[in-house]
Amino acid sequence: MYIKSIEIKDKRFNLSDGIGSDATHTTPQYAYAVCCLKTDTAETGIGLAFTLGAGTDLICKAIEYLSVDLVGREIEELMSDFGTVYSKMVDSPSLRWLGPHKGVIHLALAAIVNSCYDLWAKSRNVPLWKLLLDLSPEELVNTLDLSYLEDVFTREQAIALLRDNLSTRDMRKKVLSTGYKGYDTSVGWFNFSDEKIVENTKRAMDNGFTALKLKVGSNDPLRDIRRANLIRNTAGCNATIMVDANQKWNVTQALDICKRLGEINPFWIEEPTHPDDIIGHKTIARAIAPFKVATGEHIPNKIIFKNFFQAKAMDFCQVDTVRVGGISEFLTISLLSKSMGIPVVPHVGDMGQIHQHLVLFNHIGMNHEHLFLEHIPHLKQYFVNPAVIVDAHYQIPQVSGSSSDLKD
Image 1 (spheres, rainbow, N blue to C red):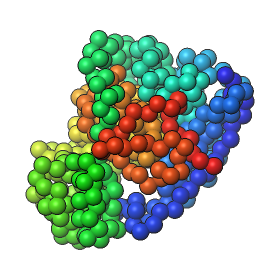
Image 2 (cartoon, helix red, strand yellow):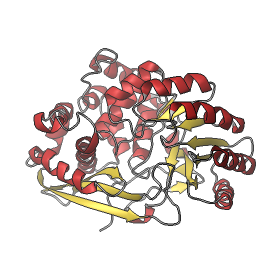
Image 3 (tube, one colour):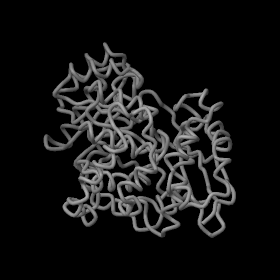
């Protein structure tokens, strides 16, 4: 199956009634820069990079620059040593200068890389999760670029980690019959009224969700405290509740407000300060323990994740495959995270479409803990094969590819 041409699409979706709002991104427009690998068959590889509207056109232009050398490549040959291909794209001499490994260029890389894995799974007529599980440890690691990690995690260690978990896979394959547990982010968007979050909490629990998330980061901390208590009192003491500040606080504010939010016993406090502030996150994590810090949706690459892990500045890793450099880097970060004892609970800029595959592989293939996966349903109607949630569990995708195809 040969890649014959590349089509790039700028897809934007308006939201209404406060949906998607948080303390930093108050009027979001969900958007994807889409890389489409056209082949000599009926199959097309689809890859997504997630943005919030303005600037998506810049990512589309970067996809054009970065993807040129993929035309003419045969998919099995391409993916047999994709780690090398990835390394050449990510370190393209002139474009690397614009990052390196972050921003518009790295988001473009995510779309390209995701399209390659999608096409690979479609060429074998299997869903992405099965493709990844069917690969030998060596074949999987061949798709990764482990450069700049060698001081803490080598190719040999990555292969050994995967190989060590082969014999116990059957114990974890029961998730294929139960589905993967989800948590509901949509109960508590920032611009929702108090009445709305109470109503949504009741509805989510009626639908089987026992884990819920509230957006915080108000200019008035008392608003956050009040709303957090509303959800806790509505959901009850046994519910799992997370709060997400979306980077709004400085470290001093975070230290104060996180402690006050502790009265609702949050499972984690997400993005409590600027995503580049490793020492700030470390300070917060130590000060608010035993409450946990989750972050990662805006951490741009594997190197900064490595530094967060080394500093013990996060308790939950929220790497997002449509925000970092695609599936290859997501798997690299997941392996590194597992080696350092940090659970992966992805942020889902893809609305869970690709991540429903990746968490299955992380759990079965790497022995990552099966915690839950974020559920955001707001773009469901635009996908050809939308994620299916039954009794708060992601159902196992059966269609070939990564579930990324968007309706025309």
